[in-house]
Image 1 (cartoon, rainbow, N blue to C red):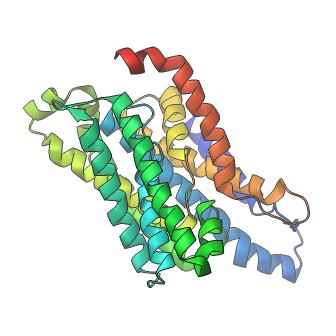
Image 2: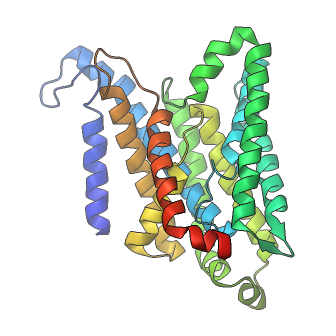
Image 3: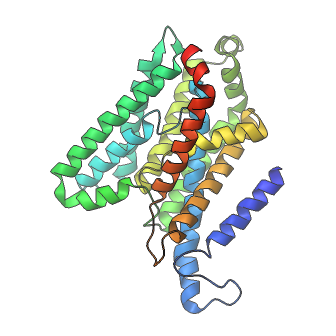
Length: 316
C-alpha cells in the first residue's frame, strides 16, 4: 500500500506538470513549452506538494496533541491568526523576510489563547476548543477587514492573497518551505514514540519520564511554524490539515511513525490535485484560487465528522 501510494503521488506530480491553460507534450515539447514546464509548472507543482505536506503534518500533530479530531490550523484559529500577522505586515509594507516571522508570532498567540481557553482542570474540552477557535477566527477576520478598509492601496493584493493560491512561485520560496518542512518532519519523527505515549495517556507518559508540557509546547510551536510559513507564502488554504490526518489514520493506523509520513504524503497529494484542478476547471486560462477548492472539500468533510461523531463531542 505504501509503495502504491508513493507511485500514485509520483505519477500525479508528473501529470500535474503537463496540465494547465497550455497543454504540454512531454515527448516533444517546443522551446516555449519547455520554458513553461521548467520555469513555471515544475516549481509550482513542487511548491504545492511542499505546502500540502506542511499543512497535513501540522494537522496530524494538532489532532494528536489536542486530542481533538476537529483540530487543524483553521479550526483552532492558528491559520487566521497567522494570516492576521501576514496581512498587517503586507499592509504596512514591511520587508518580505519579516512576513513569516510576524505570521508565526501572531499564529502562536492565537493558538495558545485558544488552548488556554479550552483547558479546564488540566483537561482539554474539544467543544470549547472549537468554539474558541471560531471566536479567534472572527476576531482575526475583523482586524483583517479593518486592514482592508484602512489600507486601500493594498486592498486588491490582500483580498487576492487571502483566497489562497500559488500565484507567485520561485525556487527561493520553494527551498525555504522545503527546509522548514524537513526540519519539522525530522523533529516530529524523532519524537514519534513520545507522541504515541502522549496520545494514549498523559499520566503514563509522565511516569515514563516524558515532560508532557514541554513536549506539547514544542509540538505547538513547530506545527504553528509550519502553518505560519505556509500561510505567509500562499494565503489561507484551509481544511487540508483536517481531512488528511483522518484519511491517514483510517488507512494506516494511529502509530505516529506512520501517521506523520502518510499525513505529509497525502497532504501533498491533495494539494497537488487541488492546484491542478484550479488551473484547469475554468476555461480560457483563468485560475480558481486553491483555497476555494480546499474550503469546499473541507466543509463537506467537517459536516461529515460532526454528523458521525457528534455524540462523542457533546457527551465525551
